[in-house]
Image 1 (tube, protein in one colour):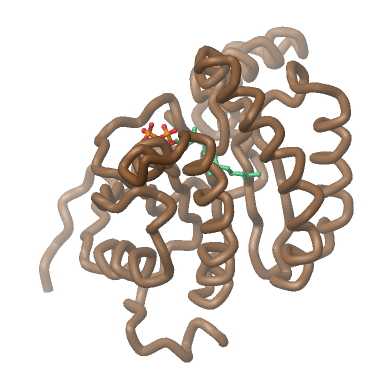
Image 2 (image 1 turned 180 degrees about the horizontal axis):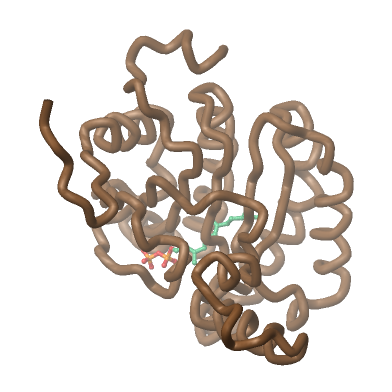
Length: 242
Ligand code: FPP
């Protein structure tokens, strides 16, 4: 289905949506299940959200899968999450190709076990010609870490301080090839950035649905896009009324 086919969509569709997929643990605990069952349910849920983004005509979807801070979770949760990533990067490639989605990664691949690094690289290679949606997976990602990485790279390359401006800094971030997010969604009722896209989010619209991530489906995504459609984006200016 093309974007025009859905009359529920507002005139302005966010080109880039970023999501903090929060509430997996609470979703599981509220059902008497282990936290990892929530992460599994959250992973399953991604498929329908990717499909809905393609349907709605969204061009970039960035998802916060694992932060540089998540390493400090209990060892069994970290290893369980790594096992889930390991399965998903194998299992979902065919589905990404079917959807026309191109896999990309932001964050540090070093620090992740070699076999998983290889799977991520293989997934990126195997989907690189897809052009309906860019699926940017923030995996071992931190916004501050990204800025530190950018500064180090600039210094190593001997960039002249006089040449440093906002455009140049953006070019040294992991997101250099995609526009800044227009809409950022954090599920589960939490209202925090949690070190996600802290540079790129400067003028993003945020929406905070109460729904836990595993229950956040097409209709909730549509509601967030509709809310975005009602926002007036001013970028610090005063808009003149006709
Ligand atoms: C936050 O919920 C969720 C995470 C830290 C992990 C999210 C990861 C996935 C859904 C898997 C995605 C997989 C791929 C390959 C992209 P939480 O555990 O903080 O929930 P809580 O706040 O209720 O405890």
